[in-house]
Structures are given as structure tokens and as C-alpha cells.
Image (cartoon, rainbow, N blue to C red; front, side, top):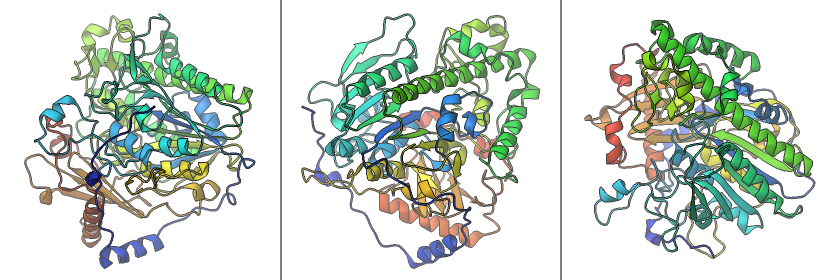
Length: 595
């Protein structure tokens, strides 16, 4: 029997519901000015009256434009086929980093509500927390998960792959396992608990128990996760529904894939990130992912231009990207195997597929990339590696920071930043028996908190109430089901705030404001920028000085949302992470950012 989570009922915050009249008027005027695309189809039709199976696929550190169907030079034919059978969403925002994104994705609640504003708690966090204070990164009781809701209405529930939602000190033993998958609604778990894993020799868990590293010399985690998924699904009666949460290690570092996949891309990235970024944006426009007049920032401050690299650097860095591309193509191939199996067994048509990334491309390895060690990264020496490129396939590597700029085309910045390069991710939704649209694009503004309520609605599950009558935290998200059938459907919610490590953002209708915090300064003195996403989807043109009143309204909106969802008082995140400050270029960079 699963061990229940246990936290004091008093840990559930009380929310302040009223809004100021000024903000209400601003919302009304903003929504009146929103643009709408032509309607595509009528209402969503059900899948023959049967409850749908659900496959939620989460990539790690995959940039907004890295999928072929979103404009990439990387081949993802199986994901592209799902997009052709359903919908691509271009306005989906994550929480910019893994644990917060996954907490919101699986609960429908904002990160501060579920005490996951940053990474899941590590032992050092507990040691640095004052006695009696809540340890940041430990989810409270009442954060009812999608898996719990689905299991209550008869779904079999499986978690495969990355978890990273439990505090480091929970080891799976009875009484010390409150935040492992089996205690949070899943019937079956196979994967890894930490933020990343070696793809050939991961430290694996099955259910609540560690099982060590695989001995198969041909083992690769991406393939094993799909094999385990198929095995779990095949044990479900054909008439019964299941929920599969398939969380790949790809494309998080270490970038590891068999040589044949990397070699498919030999020479494909030799022209470098600057040229390929321009070409990718052109393809995104031709596909309709970005509007034809969309501008793009002229690089990110602090990032080197490809033309300024040495010959050795260009050769070595291009190979890094070949490996990254092969890693993604290999994972796509595994998804194809899962889809083919569902087709053969008759479960494909009534399966809802939802595919996302947990944040933007990762820039954690800096300008040189990392070789041989990840955290902290060990700078790659191109002069040494240029004559031994095979070494890149034999150790832990992470690509150079400007490749993340390519992954996040056309947005600025990367994972962990409040700009769209950190939060905006691709999303593919397909449901052959339930969504008549094929290959269409949806541009509604969606946040990760909206996805669990969407799946719950389609499955007839309840996230807002516990069957045993235990207190449940309020759900922040709203279903996006109306968008399945129409481009005219409204955004699920007009407002969404963001906060990570003291950096802030707020979206109100078509407007988005971003506030960057510099350590050692007052939060009241933060620099804020204002963007009109309807005319400037890549945040290239700061309108803060032109519309100061509107910016103040946005700041008011942020403050009210922060108070409502428990984001105050502000901090720069866990103490142990403050030494890894990554935002200096926003204040001291060598190049302007289109401001």
C-alpha cells in the first residue's frame, strides 16, 4: 500500500482573491485588443464514448525550435507525424527550469503554491534552513497530482524516466518516500530520481527501490524507457484506460548517443549558430510557427560569434551539435516505436498525446562547452579535442552556450531566464479520435498549470477535491480543451506571472513585462522591460519608456499574482545556488540585446 504524504494542514496557504479595480480595467482593455486567427474547426468530438488513454511526453532542455515541425534542421519525423495528426501550440510557457516545470505540469498549480519555486530540495538546503522554517523544494500535502486524480477514476498510471520532485534525503524506504512517484499517484515507476542521468549507465529505480546500473552493453536510457512503457501498457486490459508520463533524459546533458546517430549530421552544423539561426527562423516563418514579419535579436550579449572562433573551435563545436542532434533524433525514433506499437494493438486512435519540453535550451556549459564533467562544467579545450573528436562520444559533454541560442530561436536567452528563451517551449497535441484538426497551429497563451486540468477534464478526473476529504490546494490552471476545435477560443487565463531566483515576468493578454534582478540591489530597483507580443513575439523591442503607465499596471499585476500564489517575499533562490549566478550578461554584457 502506498505511503501517504504527510504535512501539516496549516501548510496550505490562504489566497487573497480580490483584485484592484485598476488591474481589472487593464485586463478588460487588453482583452478587447487581442487579435484572433480564423476559426479552424467546430467543437471537439469525443473518442466513441470511451475514456481516452493519455501519453504525456516531456523532453528535458529541448529548445522551442528544436523539433522539425517547429523549424529545426534536426530530423524528428515521428514527432512531426504526431503534429501532422493534431496540433502545434506556439504560446506555451514552462517555468524555465526542471523541477518547478514538472511540479506545475503534474499538479495544475503554480510553483510557489506547491513550494517548488526552484530545484527539488537537496540535503544542503535542509542544512541551510532555519529550524522551524519550511524547507524550499518539498511539496506539501494538498498538491494533488494528475496521477492521483486519474487513478481515482480507474486509470492505470505509469511514470517512466526523470522524476526530480522529491527531496534528496528521501531514499524510497517506508516512511522516507513521501514524494516518490508511487506516493504521488503512480502505480509503476522506472527511471531516475535526480536532475540528470548517464544515458548508458544511469542509477535506476524500479518502484521505490534502487536497482543499480544496467549491465547490458547496448543499453540506452531513451530506448529502455519506451520498452518499459510498452510493457506497462500491455498489462492494462484493452477496455481500461492508462496514463503514461514519459519523461526522457534527452536532451539534457550528458549528450550521449550511438555514433551512427551523430554521424547522420556530419557537416550539417559547420556554418555555425549565427547563420543557422537565421535559416531556422526563415523555416519557422514558412511553417507558420512565427509570423512573416517576426524580428529576432542580434544574438545574446556575452555569446561569441561563430566567425570569431578559431578553426579548431568551429570543428569541435560543430561536432558537439551533431551529437545533440543525433541524441534528439534517437529519442524521436523511440517515440515512433511507441506509436507504432499503439497502432498495432488498437490503442492509438483514442490516445491523447501531449508532448512538451520542461524549459528552453541549456546554456550551463558556457562558451567553451563542457568536457568530462558537468556540474560544475569542465571547459572543453578545442585545441586538444580537434584531433580526437571520438572522445566526445565517450564522456559527459554539454554543448556550447550559443547552441542554446539556436535551440531557442527566435527568442532571447535560455533555460532559467525569465525571457521567452527560458520559458517558451514547443507543444504537440494529438488525439486522432477526439480532435478533428490535422496539422494546424494554435497561438493561444498557455501555461504549464493549464495542462493537468486539460487532461483531467478529458478523463473525467478531479484535481480540486480529494476523495478522502483531505484539504487540497486550489488549482490555478484552466483547461485548454476549447482551443482544440478553434483558433478563436480565448486564452485559458488572461494573466500569468513568473518568478525564478528573483527574476520576474508577467503576461497580461498580449503584453509581457520582464524584471531582471541584480544581486546586492533592492528588488524595488530592478530593471523592467515591456513587450507587445502581438507585434514583437521575440521580445526584441522594449516599450517600457514609451508606455510607462502600462508597465506600472503590469508591475501591479505581478504583485497581486505574487501575493495570491505565495511568491513573496522575494529571494534569489536557495543559498547554495547563489554562487551559480548566470545572469551577469543582462547587466554587463559586451553586446546590446535589442533594447
